[in-house]
Every structure is written in structure tokens, then in C-alpha cells.
Image (cartoon, rainbow, N blue to C red; front, side, top):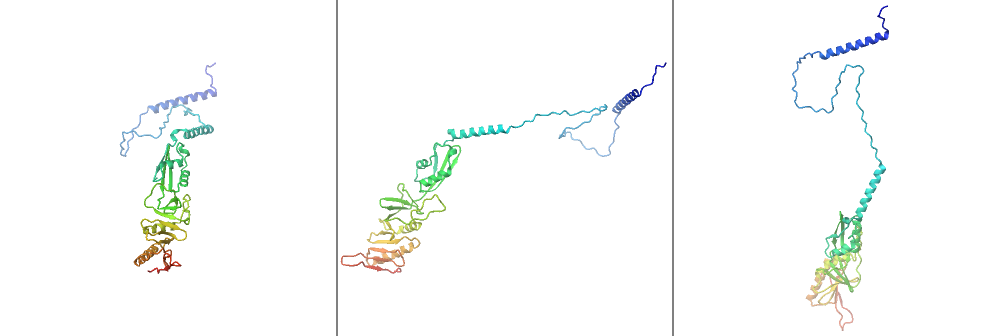
Amino acid sequence: MSDRRELSRAELVRRRRAQRTAKELEQTAKRALKPIVPVTSRTPTVPISSKPRLVSRPRRFNIALGLPEFHLHRPKISMPRLHANWRLVSILFSLLLGVAIYLAFTLSYFFVPSATVLGNVRLSRDEITTVLGVVGQSIFTVQPDELETRLRMNYPELLSAEVNVYLPNHVYVTVSERQPLILWQKGEGYTWIDQSGVAFRPRGLEAGLVSVVAVDEPPAGLSDLTDPLSPPPYMQKELVDAILALSPLLPAGTTMTFDSTQGLGWVDPRGWQAAFGTSAHDMPLKIRVYQSLVDSLMARSVYPEYINVVYPDAPFYRMAVTETEESTEEETVDSEQ
């Protein structure tokens, strides 16, 4: 009986596979030890810089291990994702905002110690500060528009008022006062009048004012629609212009008078009453007519009791009544005289 036996089919397959694997390993070893054939290039070589070149991403290498069905896999690293809790964030934000508001209204650092007043001439700083009422308040509660309105309503002599607020606790007030031009007296009271006819309380002594003694009230002026905070004018602006135009002709030592019938006038030191009306647009003509009439009367040594130039085209004068006269002598004068 022979020791050799026939191999089965499976054994033959395993033997051929082992022989093939051994043959592949032997060929791989021969290729690895085979010298590299030198290659000659016909193109000129390009000089290579010695500086290393920065690579934007790592280079990839493929390694032949000679082992069948062998793969390398990149390790996967997963980071835990953080999910924001918006409800918690909103609660923290609300708490921080509440603390900031509380500190803003309670810290003495934001309290107004005093107000800086600029532009005042007759009004004192204490008067303006008292009306403002901002001393000791938080700077966040100060309302500039409200303070400007309060100042204009309490002091008609203010032509304008501007309030500016700056952190941490500064309040600046810039005012502009009305300039008095007329000292208006009626009975025992008196007031100042500015260019627009607004009356306001006198403060101290003001030089250069035109004094007017009034028998009754002047015609009221119209309110300024462009400035709702401006008080209504005490008198018409035309009457103010007439007073200012007539004041240079006023004799020394006399005071201008006013009544609703004759308008503006005065008692001349030479003994007569002069009347000029209230119109301002023809006041220069009235002054020339009056001066011509007075020069004519003085040249004739005539001293009337009353001279009226309310209508410059028909001026007249009236002589005083004597004991022998039964009626008042009145003579009309030509305006061209």
C-alpha cells in the first residue's frame, strides 16, 4: 500500500494559493531591490529654492505593504455639541438690566448737584435753578423739553431757553433775555416793553428806556404763531415802532404820554399839548410837519394850547381860551406851510 495518497480538491486550492502568495512576495522583494534607471532630461533644469514651501494642507502618501485586503481608516473623533438654553440667557439678561436700572436711579454719582446757567443778564442763576428743580434728581429723569417750557412759561422776559443734559450729572441751561426798550407806566404800576410789544417785569434800573405815561390800555398785539411759548404782545408792534421813532423829538425834561383818542404825545415846556396818533408808517412825515408848524408859530410869537398832527395832511393848532373870548379859537394850517 503506497504512503502517497491523492490530495483533495480543497487541499489543492490551498496549496496553489500559498504558492501564488509566496511568488507575489518574492516579486515584490525583487522590485524593491531593483536599482533605479537614470533618466536624462533634455530640458534645462530649473533651480530649486532653498526656502521651504508652505503647504496649505498636509500631503497624502500611499504605502504599498504587499498584503492583500489590508486598509487603514481615519479615526473619528466626535465633540459634544453645546445647546444654549435661551430661557436661561433671557433671565440673566433681565436680571442684569434690572440691576443697571436700579443703580442708575439710586447711585449718587448720577444725581445733579447744580445747573450751569449761561447767557443770563438780569435773571439770577438761583431763580432759574429754582424753577428748573433738577438739583438732587437723577440725570435720567431730567426732561430737557419740559424744562425749556417751564422756564419760558415762568419768565416772559426770556426770548429763548435751551437745556442740554450730559452724563454723568451735568445740566447746562442757555437762555436769551428780551431787551427792554420802553418803560410803560399806567397809574402806580409800570412794566418793560421789548421790540415785539411783549411786556415783562422790570428788574433793576435800565438806562436809555423811553418812558411813556399811559391814561388807558394800548391796542393788544397778535401772538407769534411760529413760537407757541412766546407770551401774547401787550401792545401792537406798530405802536412800539411809533414810540421809538418819536422819542428823538421828545423835548428834554418831558415824558411821552398815551391815550386811545389822541395817541402818542407830550406836554411841551413852551406850554402846548402835542398829539401824533399811533401810526408808525407816516411818523417821519408827522415829525417834519410838526417841526415846520412850531417854527412858523414861534416866528410869529404865537403860543397855542394844542397842536395836532395825527393827520399830517391836515394839521391844526388851537389857541387857549381867555376870559374875554366866548369860544375857542381854532385855526387849520396847510400841511405845506
